[in-house]
Structures are given as structure tokens and as C-alpha cells.
Amino acid sequence: MLLAIDIGNSNIKFGVHAGGKWAHFWPVETVRNRMPDEYAVLLRSFFAEAGITAGDVSSAIMSSVVPQLTTGMLDMLERQLGARPLLLSNKLDTGLEITTDQPDSVGTDLLANAIAGYDRFQANCIVVNFGTATTLTAVAAGPQGIGQLRGVAIAAGLAVTANALVGGAAQLSHVELAPPPSVIGTNTRHAMQSGLVLGHAAMIEGLIDRMRAELRNAQVIATGGLAQIIANVTTSIDVTDPMLTLEGLRLVAERNAG
Image 1 (cartoon, helix red, strand yellow):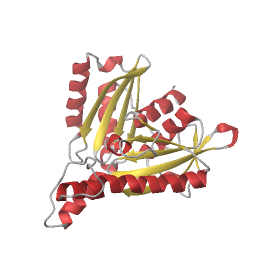
Image 2 (cartoon, rainbow, N blue to C red; image 1 turned 135 degrees about the horizontal axis):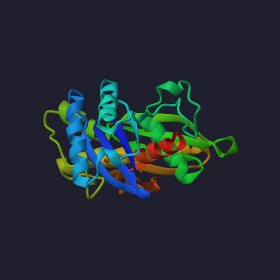
Image 3 (cartoon, rainbow, N blue to C red; image 1 turned 60 degrees about the horizontal axis):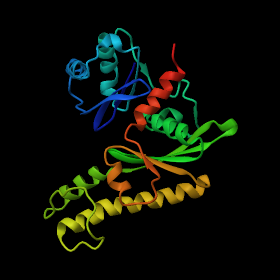
Image 4 (cartoon, helix red, strand yellow; image 1 turned 120 degrees about the vertical axis):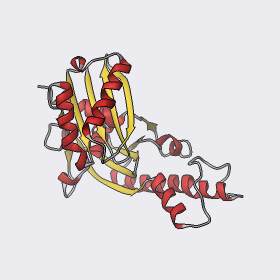
């Protein structure tokens, strides 16, 4: 049984992989000033809910883009599980080359997504992650079929954009992030939804087209909390997978077993 943890800027995802599938999945809000022992209480409650114990976990792997939580979470998990989890980095055997200018600066969430995306398609692909930031990671098939993480486009996430718009405009208030009935908004709510949701989709479509031109075609896979909202209003995304990041962690854990 594998425990995988992805610490992101907005959410921390805990997943248990057993029996060839993700048997349990628990997302929680990332709270930077929360003590590791508080996350330990959450983890124990998740395990109790699932009817499993720490002893059932045979291996664990973690990814983190929140440095102030990384060491404390590793220490906490070591106390709970009896062994220190593997920490994802480009120094591990990932099965993927990073050919960017600064490989060490590539976020481990992007790395995990790229690993899982390439494993799925075994060909050129673009991984779109709809999180705090919206990122598009370009992965190409290299020599001997080894995937190469070529680079990334980073934009403000949909929720971040919406918050910035409301915060900067006195007469605008928060609206549901959902597609409007028409791109031409006939009221303030629909006008904002058009600009935010359809505008974000148009940006994604444009970046995908440009990346595809440089990669010479590519499949597109999307993940993240808001992925399905955008996937519903565009044909540029081929498939969505909410477990993509954890799946990348699982693949790395298997490659580095022992």
C-alpha cells in the first residue's frame, strides 16, 4: 500500500494506492502556519475513516512546493509511518529528462504531472494544471522514447484572477466560476463569467496551439481543481485526470523502490 502526498499552494492531497487503484483520496486546504502535528491528526482520522493503519502502508512519497511545510511534514510522516517518505526531486530516477535552462527550479508538482502525462501517452503531450497558477507543461518524446520536459508556461490561476478582479473593482462582487449562457454577457454576473471562464479557456486554447506548433502536435491532459470547468468549454483538452499528480508520484515511487 502506497501513501502519496502532494503539498500545493492551495491544497494538500493525500492518496492511498492499493489493489491497482487509488483506493482513498483526501484533499485539504493548505494552511502554512498549521503545525505538522495538526496534519498528523488529520492523517490519523483519514486512516480511521478508511479502516487502515499506519502499519498497512508499505511505502510513501511526497511532493512539496511549499518549503515552509516540507521538512515538518516529512518529520511528521516519519513518526507516523516509521520510515521517512521519499521526497520527489529531479535527483531521483524519474524516467524523464528535464531539458529546461534551470532543471532545479522546475516545481515538483509540474514534474510529477509531466511524468504521469508522458507515461499515459508515450508521445508528445501538454499537461495543463489548473491550480493557484494555471500551468502548461510541454513534454516531448526524446531519444529511445524517453520523455523530455521541455518547458512550462505559467499564468495566474482562474480563482486568483477572479479574486484580483473583484479586489480591484469596487462595483464587482464574486460570482460562481461557471460558464455563462452566452459569451455576450447581458448582466454583470454573466459578463464576469464570460471574461473569467471563457477568457481563461481562450487563453489556454491559444497557448496550447502555440505549444503544439513548437512540439509538432501533442495530446493534452488537464488536472487540478478547476480543470473540469474549463474542459467543459473547450475542445483543446483531450482528457482530464484529477489524480494525475499523485499518479506521477506513484510511478516515481515504483521506479525508486528499495
